Image (cartoon, rainbow over all chains, first blue to last red; front, side, top):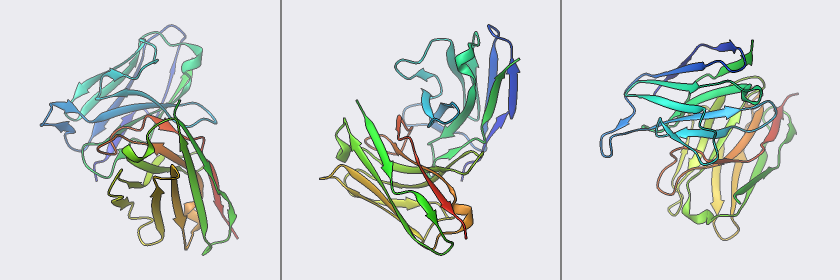
Length: 113
Length: 120
């Protein structure tokens, strides 16, 4: 199985500042048939199910604010929140779907400093 | 809009059985892969099982292989997870989530989850 490792485990950022979360896969998740990275980001707020934020590493799901962006390719990926808002407090997960079974990172807890 | 509603969770003793259901609405259920994802208390997300759209081909995590059975009824827009020989470590919130038409892919819709507690 592909192992997904996120860093850091937790992060505290001031309101309005940038937050950066990293995700590393144990092997490349690039689909050579379409040159897309099979990497997804989710946000989970307390007491709620996960919510899809970004797929194909950098495509925002409809309705997701543009302060959320994804980047990276191959094995190294980043989720960036350009200007942290109070409602962004959550745990963020990356997930690969290049090779079954799908696997998730351990999560990164984002808090307000 | 897409809606997924799980039911069937509860308290069960080790070795017992439980059947979870997920009622789907707002989309053409038969066209999509469906998955069960679980989350142990205070922990991360773990893929449990998935089922393909038309052929109902199934896959399971090693931790549940031989004990859990996923199934779908496309006529009733429902997904099920039969859980037998339950263990304490199966305690978790179980989410039903929608994949893509041709693969599990990313999960764009999730239910609210149903809590399964395995304890003596």
